[in-house]
Image (cartoon, rainbow over all chains, first blue to last red; front, side, top):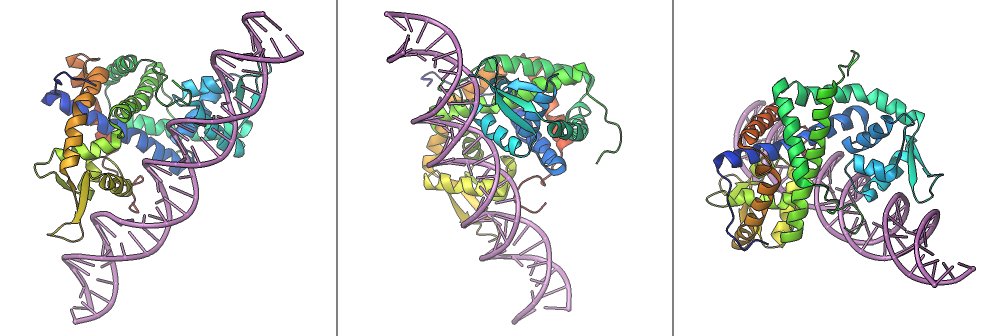
Length: 163
Length: 163
DNA sequence: TACCTTGAGTTGACGGTTCAAGTCCGAAAG
DNA sequence: CTTTCGGACTTGAACCGTCAACTCAAGGTA
């Protein structure tokens, strides 16, 4: 791609780039390590359980849950099998349309989320919210939304469907 | 941990949190997919090669390179073996201190970086720099640095040494 | 009824990362 | 000089995510 001359990053841009890539590498790793240590679940597993726990009926279609968790259906399916084997959720075919599968949080799964959430929130607060001024996290929200828009919906890269 | 009452996130904080976690999930994935598609290397492999290419002698100690790439020594070691087998770098014991290992970029590795960089920079520009105002990426830099400071150096979580 | 298509979800193989040893070098202590 | 120790890698197994192929349900067509 690109037969045209690249526009290199200037010092300001490169400094932003290096600082940002460092943050987006280490921040989820730090949260993951904290959850792994205190609750024995990965950040991704927690997000799946938390996604279900936010629903009044603690139920979501697999595909909806995959979109919420920003992951491929394949990844979610493997993870759901592991969470199912731990008794935190179960899966049933959608009674109204057998093509869909519903993931349902069990009571044990709910308890897990309730037990885990406070420590996780405290860590998010420590590493993100309290580290920034109120102005800064308003800025961060706008920045994140802009970048998310630039990425677009691109369901393409690696989500288990053939693009 | 935490017998005390948690301070939950308010609406503003939660919106920031959700937007940010979406960004830090999808942004590296988008860059990785682009590199994988156009150059056949992962984002992490590219960072390793690029880290070496920035040095005048194209050489770094493994431990320094691991810190630069924000990864565990174990991960870097496995990756270095794969990159070595592709002829893009080689490793030698540090002549001045046999406890260290030096990773050295080969000419082929240099060529790979030179061939890959323009497209990669263009993608970074598209997804990040051009998506933001100049003010915003100055803000992003400061935000990233603050979060990085909050995370600290924490060599602990998962870097192949016993904490 | 039979057939084709589409999309959701699952599965198994493969490749990369983590984790827990283990190796090796050099410095410090005896 | 030898022993001990810590730090810098390395290695192999276990684990997890990706990719491609597959199953299954529903709708459309005839």
